[in-house]
Image (tube, rainbow, N blue to C red; front, side, top):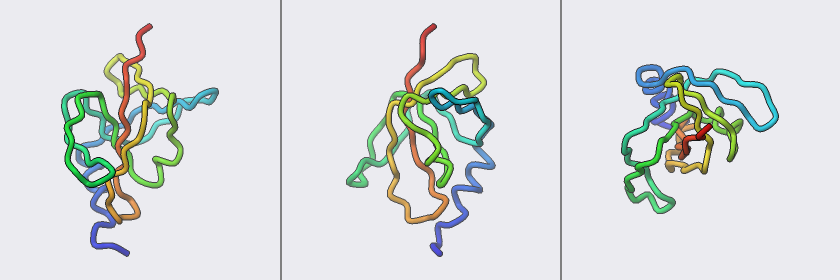
Length: 107
């Protein structure tokens, strides 16, 4: 157990919203996540802060295990996004957030 366990759940409850996650070849399901289109700060592999200007999605562990590159995300803003990659944040918490960079899918 870590002092950080549970914090992501509180933040996800306050700042998160339901989004639709559709894996390749699968059916869409609703997950709770924090979606942002504007610039956000994320940690790189060396725990340095970098500014991401791409749309991002934050989901808690272990929900992140169901998300993969090229899966589709619909956050309810009328747009569809594709997962480009993930950026673990280095937190030891069992429910820590995992960041996913997204790109808009143009129809």
